Image (cartoon, rainbow, N blue to C red; front, side, top):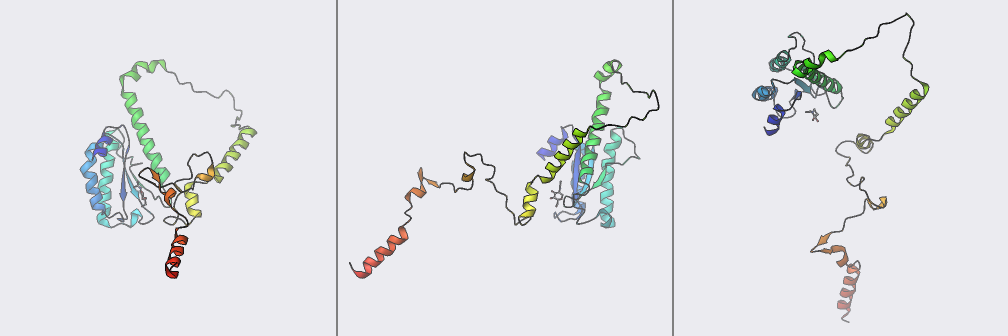
Length: 241
Ligand SMILES: *[C@@H]1O[C@H](CO)[C@@H](O)[C@H](O)[C@H]1NC(C)=O
């Protein structure tokens, strides 16, 4: 609740993530109830309902009852559009679907949130006194064509080459996700905590850490030959020498 309240004081867009597959353990009805209980905190910000995990459950496939809950949530988000001077007919970026597994819709969600936030900020700025005082100082020049000559954009060859080089580099980049996929996938792969250690010698990274007890290094008190000596002792005892 603390972070939700903090959110109310930030000039931010609010994304309400809904798990329509229900695999998180909460039904759509319960998630809708949560939204309705906290929505009043977000009324002056762009609110976006994001249906997540569409790989498990497409939005079209949910029950009629659940559809009603989603529609109600969408109506709440619509209020934030209208409250910020938007048109009641424009429901763009209000209810979105995405899946982190297939990465479908993720970028669209990000873009929609940024777009609505930006629009709101511009609107607020235009309303402020400062801008009206200064507006007559601004002039936006728009070029008019003086002839009908075609002037397509020209990208110099060197730039194109540099770009291609950059793209190739990006493709080769080995992210932690690549490593995971190469090395057994999720659950099986375990990331190395040590690989980014900054040491004088890279070979030391995987070294075992000394175990310290009462200020002493335990290893200093380990006798590597102890089993051997024990055997010797036993033998001595048996032969009675
Ligand atoms: C969306 O669903 C995925 C898969 O269950 C989950 O890992 C992720 O945290 C969810 N995203 C959000 C923002 O809730």
